[in-house]
Image (cartoon, rainbow, N blue to C red; front, side):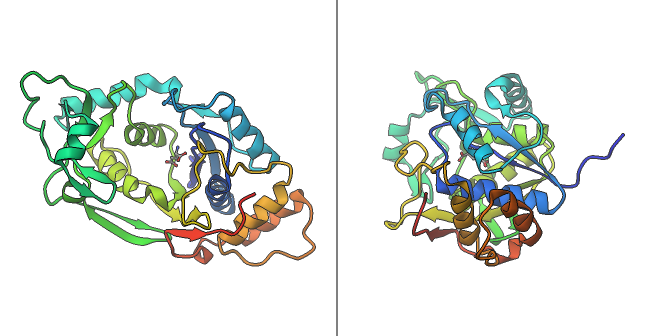
Length: 303
Ligand code: GLU
C-alpha cells in the first residue's frame, strides 16, 4: 500500500459569491505550498449555510480556479454531504460533557456580555443549565479557566490565548440547526487527512478555537500558516458576498502575478507571458519565508 503523503493541504471556499483577489491569494498560497512540498491539494466547498449560498457561486468558483490553472487533486468535497459526520462529533462531545445547550439570543448577549476581540464574550449564562422558561437555541463548547491554547504558525510565529477569558465558550451548533463552521472544519480536515493549512490571517482566532476542538475530539493537531489578509485602499476586507470585486477570470496570468507579488515572492521574469509557464516557475521558486509577517496588507489592485 502506498504510504500517506506527508503534506496534504486544502482550499475551502464558501460559495457565497464569486472568487475575489483575497480568496485567490489564499488559494495560490495554499496550492503552491503543497505543490512545492510534493504534496496534495484538495478542494472543499463549505456549503453548509444554504441561506448565504449564492446560486451558481460554487460552480463559478470552480471554473475560475480551473481558468487560473489551480488544479486540485481528487474530486471536490461538499460539506452538505457530511451531516452525519458532524452529528457523530456532536454526540461524542455531548457524551464527554464538553458541550451544553444555550438559550441566549445574540440580542441578550450583546446587552449583557463583555466585548472581546471578536464581539461579545459569552458570560457563561447557561453553563450550569438553561434558565427556567428558556429553550436551547445553540450548543456551546465549554472552555476551561486558564486553559492556554497555542499554535506555532509558520508565518505569524507563536500565537497563544486564554480561550476562556478572551473568546469564551463558543457555538458549535447554530440556532438555525446548522453545524457551526468551527465544528465542520475540524471534522472535515481530520476526515480528509489534511496535515497543513494555509489560509488568511482573518481566521487566526478561529484557529485557536479549532485547536481546542481538536483536543476535545482527540484529533491530531495540524500545521498552520496564516497569510496576510488582503485589504482594499479603505482598509476593508474583501468580501465574496459583497461581490464588488470579483476576479476577472479572463486575465488569469495577471491576477496570479499580482497575488504572487502580494505574497512577497521573488520577481518573475519580465517576459513571462504564458499561464503554463507561470506554474512550474512559481512552484520552483515558492518560499513561505518571503511572505510578509503581517496579518493584513493593502493591495492597490484586485482584478
Ligand atoms: N470557508 C472559509 C471561507 O471561505 C474558509 C475556511 C478555512 O479555510 O478554514 O472563508
